[in-house]
Image (tube, rainbow, N blue to C red; front, top):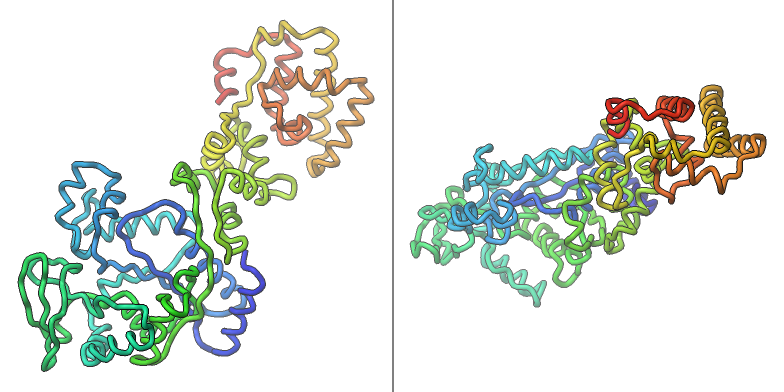
Length: 480
């Protein structure tokens, strides 16, 4: 799914840095799960990792979880599914790092771990397997100690440098101290730095505290934090949307300037991606309905373009993913899935059936259940029509037994010849058969026959030949 331009960028980076392990990185904050619109960068990063592997290169895939970030009220509402009881119980926790807040659902050690687990479960279903790096743990260990000393030693110089380099940009805090008293991190402010110590004040609890460079807890401002992680982990590639790549105000270029001026100058190649937008009614509807491959088609084609996802685009993507050379995901849902659900005989049942059932219901507005004919339908059959239908079904069963490898085109040619030989008029008999098996009008009947399991065809033949309704037990099974 990678475009040729991106493949060239990757290959050039590899050639310029042998024999270095290539690193692809992304970042998120596990404050809530959220809907599908933010998945594009992670799908792209995962595809890049797989392509780098295909070139015979070793590759790291880092996902930085900014678990030191403060929880805000909007994130809390989404995280607890807008449950008023949980909102009231946890709104006082807003402003604290999500790593220090207990899990509202009491199944993980803390708030951050709960949603990190949910995010990773979602990623794994989409074939995304990054190495999750917990940023709180980086700050808690000694890996950032050298960076802390450098930042605090050059605190005023960093602000002056940024004001000069980016006149329209103002960094509120180069470092956000964690208040030792109330554990808030978004209400603190550094007042002065003197003799290897930092003095900060918390606006929430109105207390002042003095700590050493290495002893102080907290986190760097986001762009400084990014530059520090670049200097330590040396990423080669990171996906970024256009907003981050503005040379005058974009976060990427601000972090790059900090890295070049105060650290070792490391920075990744920015991989440009467009934004994803869709109507709220589509939120949380894509993941249950679309398998990984359709997701990639939908999200990764024309990666630089902003995309507004609509039901029309979703259906179009479902038609592009070919399960076999003859059948798209769209065709599978409409023509094969109903029989798979009834017969339990498809090897793809576990992989696609749950997606397909949701896709059919949500995007095709159909609950497709093939049904065997009932007594009323059989009574309405004219004898001459019944004879022709029996001949046609017998021919289809034998044809599928003899030529299991036939393509749909070959099958269609055969069925057209059979219709002519049996003197069956398509416009008369096909609507009758559609009514007998309760299938929608939009699907060509030849395709329905082509994908229809033999067991269903046999049952249909037996019922029509005998002229008797299936027993209630068998009828119930056939209807799923």
